[in-house]
Structure formats: C-alpha cells, structure tokens
Image (cartoon, rainbow, N blue to C red; front, side, top):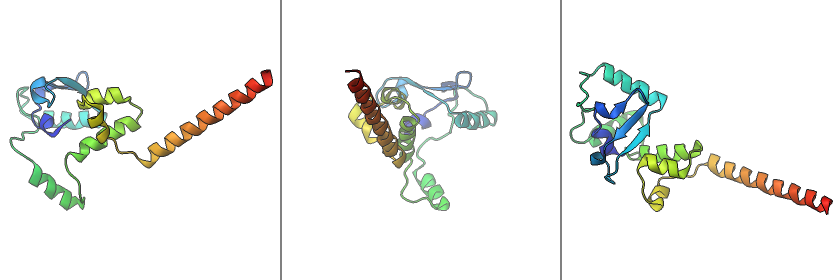
Length: 155
C-alpha cells in the first residue's frame, strides 16, 4: 500500500473475516478502489492494535494525522538502518511478491499500478532471481536437447 493509503485506513476497511484490507477509491492515487490481502503477520499485528483500540470502525487504524518522516528517520537511526525511506517498503513488498511466484498482473492489481513501466521500476532483481532464471533456462535448453535427440532417433 502507498503511505497515504496506510495513513487514511479506517478500521472499517480492515476485514479480519476475509484477511483483506479494502482501499476505497477516495484513498487511492489512481482513484480506483482495490483490495489487498493480509499476511498472517500483518493480521496478527492489526488484531493486537484493534484489541487495544476504542473499537470504533470509523477510527483511523494508525492515528496518523500529518506525517511520520521525522519519527521514521529517528527509528531508523536508532536501529542503525541507513539510507532507507518508508517508500522502500513498497519496493521490497513488490519484489517479494514477484519472487514468491505471483504473476505480474496480480501484483500490479494489488499494488495499484496501472502502467507496466511504472510497476517495473518497483522490481529489484535479486541474486536468487537471476540464478532461478538461469536454472530455468538451463532446464529448458536441456529439455530441448533431449527432445531433439529423441526426435533424431525416431527418424
């Protein structure tokens, strides 16, 4: 989710029963509503927040009214994390969804990207990805070679 979508999130948008968060069109950059799934970890953390909240479905989930820039910077410094922005979380999530085997079109729908060129800027190719692609290519070429050998034997 985009930072603004997260900050505008209300408890009514969190659907614990279906493990989803509904992002209303009024809260999205593209003005199109969408739904994102919750991982088990996110669901657990949101449940903890809900349990300690006033349980008002109209209430903001995180209570952010302005910005978190200085707070986020301070937390990163305290943790020894350098050169990291809040938006980097979005890049990481996008890359991890693709690495987990989700299709580009599914991930684009979830992240709210309507343009492939913009979406591709969010993908960071990792060593595991390049090695997986190279292995897949090796397997494909090997399979083709086996098919050609078998075909030559038949003729």
